[in-house]
Image 1 (cartoon, rainbow, N blue to C red):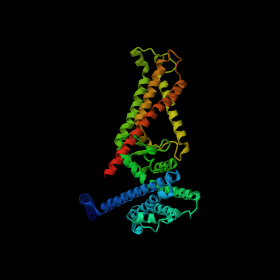
Image 2: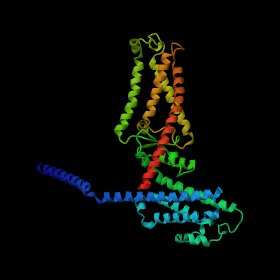
Image 3: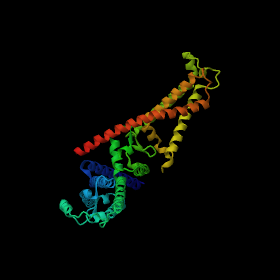
Image 4: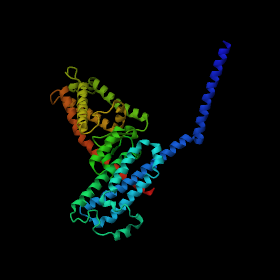
Length: 421
């Protein structure tokens, strides 16, 4: 027994020694910085550089689309826009080369190997644009001698083999524009989540980010913006402190910490509980104040709390039906998962409290007007809550328009700061 106890003591002492050694290594790693943490930090920096280069590529692609639109709208002739097309070609080609140089050992691919299919698609789209007859003659020209080569070009060297008909030219320009928009959409799938996080970082909890308004310059087509927004809703972990609503095109900001999420949820529950208790004891309060309402009398067929629950039911049903209608055209679930309910409530605390205040006003109106009109019933209370919520929605839409204007101003400030940097 003594030998067995001695072995147990040795094992315990060795286990304590290993724990102490692990703690010491963790402390040294925090103080000095372990090689693993440095490698992760450098990988994150490399990936941020990769995203910044993608955004630069997206800017050049949008410039190319703008020039093509000028030609197709008749604002510029093809000869007048040749130099601009050449410059866009050279700028995009340089961005592609910088972005994917030394492809076999690219650092961002070591950080996230899931990006390889995306990289391949971007390069394939650019190859299709590069092989277009309008751009094929730019391939062997040097960007440094852009002006000199432009002067040496003949006027009929426009990729249409000297045809006088502009149909071929417009068709090829349309093909280039379509491929360029697909490039911009693919780039947006990678760069927009980080930009959304940058926007949410500058917003307070409870504010909304109007996605269509903010990213209208990057994704001109509404269908493309809807695709990216659905992509964000399918990957909620990529968005920090934000909930995506595809139907309205809004992203709701919720608090950074779980403590304030709970505080906001308890604020909503506390308001509901307080007004419920008020209407439960409305008979005593009515008698004490001497108001003499029918809902406060002891011989009334319906009490104030039933009117309160009827109004609340009408408001909730109207919200649920409106949410289901809005989500019919989207590929998202009509209702949010249960795990997101606390976050959703904390993000929309002000709107929910506004709805509770509308319910309170409607309930008091039914109680005090019961003597002049017919006595309130559960059906009347339900219909009153349903109609009042639709009326309040018109007022809330004005608040959302004001928030969109504020977000647009914030975007201008962020753009000015980025240009200074």
